[in-house]
Length: 390
Image (cartoon, helix red, strand yellow):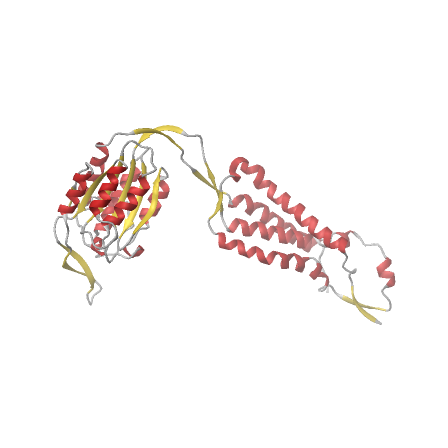
């Protein structure tokens, strides 16, 4: 007696058939997304691209569901295998690889869906009037100082703070910038943040939704805030405006300190701004060298505050404004800060330009639905057609 598996020998024809069916079913599954998206395939990016590495298991899933499935079939004891090898296969034998193929393709579509493909759609350009503005925001440690006067409409733009915590200068700056962005229609806005070094948070753009998201996530620990490199920050802002086409270009500097460190002197950065035709409008947050700063918590869990020295240099800010034909402002509270920002825009002449506002389309559902259907079909076939009885 010979112990054999109830399967036919693996042939190159079967391997070719498995691969061909996998490609065919994949194309059928992708056809829904292709015809449903029309132009949505342009400019695709991924929200969770690291999940695409999960597709590395698909070859194993395909092998396990087709060729590997034969090894799990029940075994029988027979005297000779010759009659079985010569016998014609039935429909179940011919279609035995379909469930594994359906499962593999369905799982692949689900992986693509989880990676969240996003299509960037560019509508027709339109003629707009606006200015190019770069907001330069100080993220040094002094921005944690308290600023109590805070209008309610601005407070609503920020997440609620824990009980006992008072709003900070950074809270005021973030709320005012969010309010400022929300009131823009055709002004291209960029954001530069600085502490010990200067970084571009966003180049000038009309994508206000993206800007609002980036600004709302700014925190003091985002960068090293041990210094205040005003000169470097202005230099980075000038570089962002250099290639702009707007007639009016403005740099709005929001800071509460003096220049410390950096490789570019603020005065030299101001000269660079004049070369590209940009005006600098410094806004000094706070009016003195001392301010209240949270110093931990007391025994009852309440925040403790103390007066801390934060040297400011209004003379430097006035000089920067004078050199670039701008204007300096002093904002003691959030409302004054908001008024300063809007006063800057009232002084600038708007320029006509072609604006292209991009929109985004989340494509995950175009892969989720066919993926779920294919896996459901695999389960149905295994339950009703290819059910095994031990």
